Amino acid sequence: MMRPDVLNHGYRPATKLLFKLIRMFSGHPVPDAAKLVFYRPDFYGARAKAFTHAAMRGPSAWSVADRELMAAYISQVNGSAFCIGAHTATARRAYQDGPLVAAVLADLESAPIGEPLRATLRMLGKLTADGTVSADDMRRVLAAGATTRQVEDALAVCAAFDITGRLADAFAFEVLSREGFEAGAKYLLKRGYS
Image (cartoon, rainbow, N blue to C red):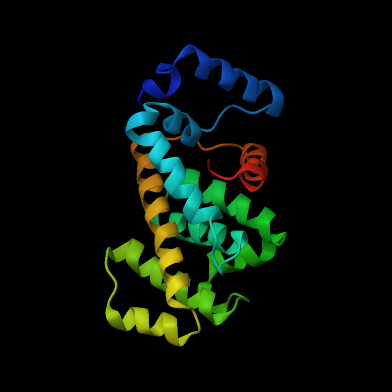
């Protein structure tokens, strides 16, 4: 993919100033995911931020850490390097357990997590890879102990990160350094996606 120049230059003066302030105070460039949201916010950015914030930080029986792990897992299935880095770092920080996150991403079936989360991640992986799930897939998630509301919440996370991952790849988002992803994770856990 060729990176569109608009991610570097297509902003209003106030937005450019904001980006400079963020870089000055954080010591890191603004991630391309944020740049994309600020480019034509009336068309994409405002709606994407609101939807993603509700999916990731709205009321849910899933913890913030669980939802960040879902985002990392979905991103891994999609093969989106930027999103894998961003949400793996955020899940590690949210759980305060890097080995747990690594175990889930390495082998879901043997990872030390509860069955409702495992079954939900399995279903999200199938939906992401195949674009479809069956009634039997949903019954298995419910039989593992997830509630219908948890399934709905997980599907919202899946929608948000299937879209974001595809945009990240289409726009050739720059993959940050580990320090850059850690700074982004700290921001996401403090401020969310709004």
